[in-house]
Length: 124
Image (cartoon, rainbow, N blue to C red; front, top):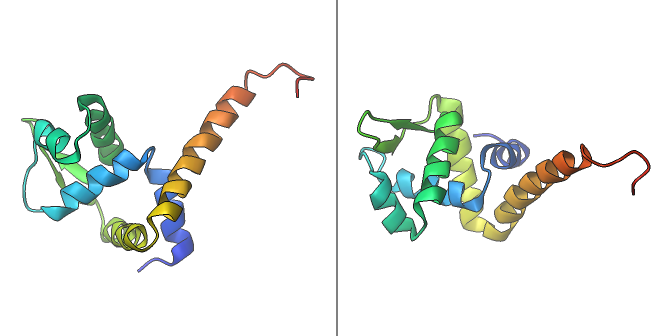
């Protein structure tokens, strides 16, 4: 099992939003079942856009697979990823606010870096 620092790194570099993590948790409940996007929208009480973005994020991270019909299921690409997911799920269960802050800070720092790229020299 990865240590807490590696789990926190995994969380902050993998999930663009808390919705992504919530989507993963929903898929982890039924790892042997293909889930359709509309069913995930209903289960999470989220929008199509949020679930579609989450699916893209989790696919890119190698945490889920997608069938030709568009359905998805939890299937990490490696045992190491499965261990990191397990650690993230445990940490989220024990300290949900800390995990949310990790995700928000990671996405905020990316936005800050992007906006800083457009700052005119001498601006503060």
